[in-house]
Image (cartoon, rainbow, N blue to C red):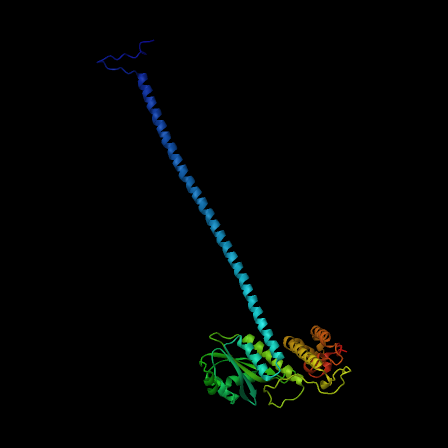
Length: 394
């Protein structure tokens, strides 16, 4: 070993001699330690930044994802709620429409089956009362209003009107309904309804009410007002459309019954006439089937046959009245062209087939359906049925 590489021995009381190599080694070790520490700090700093950045990225990704899910969820919920509401609305509308058609059908049947003026008026008022809080019926006789009957919520005493007549000139709104033959909406003021009627009805003068004419004379082409219906709502406007339908059915039913009577009435023009079943004029033999247009001997028929004839007459009146009410355009076109059968072939053929099936199985039966077609639909002019019409049932 060389002398310069030897480390001097340290003895007590003597200083230690450090060689350059030892000094350099110590400094290098310290530098390495510092570098390692600096690296560790750098690594820790990077790791901390990486961890913080990862969390931010994850948080942002999750936030975006959940925001998207929330929006999609809300959209789906809104879509399903809207779909359910549409279904419920459709169901509600269907139920309401079914109730409306049932009510109208019931009213139409009662009007057709009514055999007295009171029964007819009751059917009309009951039908209207389902859609209004108050309904009052007045007949029109020689330019005067005559109270017939009423329906109302609560109480309403109209006994003072029972034996009184009100000149229509004193009630301008009623006069307007008669003149225009159309529904009139007016305020319930004395100036519109007359002092007497406004006082009896006790309606606030600013309230809006409806006046609807009941028109007859369609079959005779002499339209006239037989009655006027007064209607009002309970705080809400009444549905004038449905009231017009009911009054139109009432007029058609009354007109059909009057036409079926084939007799002139003694009541003044425009008044409500008595409704009664058509009683065949005696003449004919029970054992033989009457010819078309003839009537059987009513007294010679037993009770069962009389009831069957009455039902057959009612069937004919109803079916022809339905054509006039629901196929008005076709009826008018058929009359103008002189070809009613061609314009209403489907309705007539179904009616003829049903009449034949239900009533033509007894020898005394006659084709009331044909008679009603001629009398009411063709205005007693068989040529209007047209050359295609097959004629009465055998």
